[in-house]
Length: 321
Image (cartoon, rainbow, N blue to C red; front, side):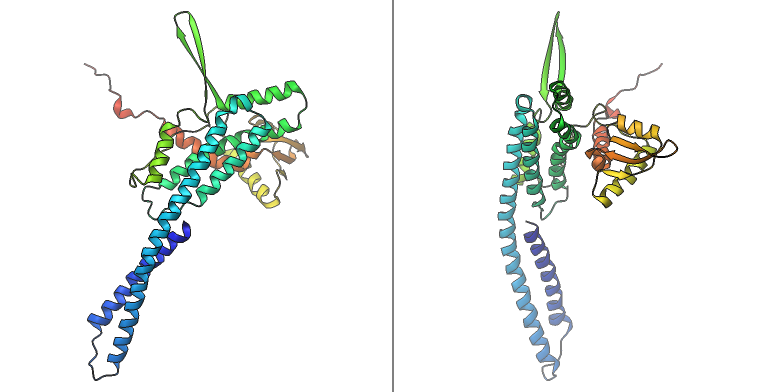
């Protein structure tokens, strides 16, 4: 779709330039028939007219090709979205390493299909809405990948159950309600619950029903329980650690910080461990997978927090006499 979109942009630019040059030859450059410039004027005018006509034909072909690619790429996105959604419905019964591996594969398919989508005109950034949908499911991988990796290495049944319970707390939301003396607890899967409107919006984008309507995801798996927003000092640590991770392609990097700061990052589950150095400082740290995505996740967390703030315009001030 991106190629067809760029072809349309190029043909539009060529058409405009050709039209301006042709107008110049016809209306502004008027050599007499006896001069040598008259033949050049006629030759250039006809040449530009041919380029202009070719651009218009290319534009029509590009639009037809773009519409077909848009349909196919959006259908591929919707099919992969449906496959991932159905897989998420089986989380409660089938949560395991195998389930996560299949989840990661389906998520990668969804992300790849999104990368093929490039709208010709996107004034309200509907493509960004589709990206927010992908990020919602991507956050689950960032929050749990280290836990599933630990699960692969654990043989103890009790330890495995504890890890799976921690993962369940991220996905399964429990709500209790009282009816008389009876307390009822309901469990909802956050990967699938209340996604009807989001699915409808994706379908509207596919059918191009409201090209000027700005859709909002307004949902996130991140909360104060499973994601810790750090102070500036610790964010500076993570920023420097992330640079070394990218440079050396490793989650174990040489880094010096006070031991108490390293303990805090271990407690927040950004570090899995560290090696002592001199003067109560670390010499090497082992990072969890989430470190590489911390700043993107923080931006999504704060964006969702802003969306959930109540609009004070709808609150009436108490009148005083």
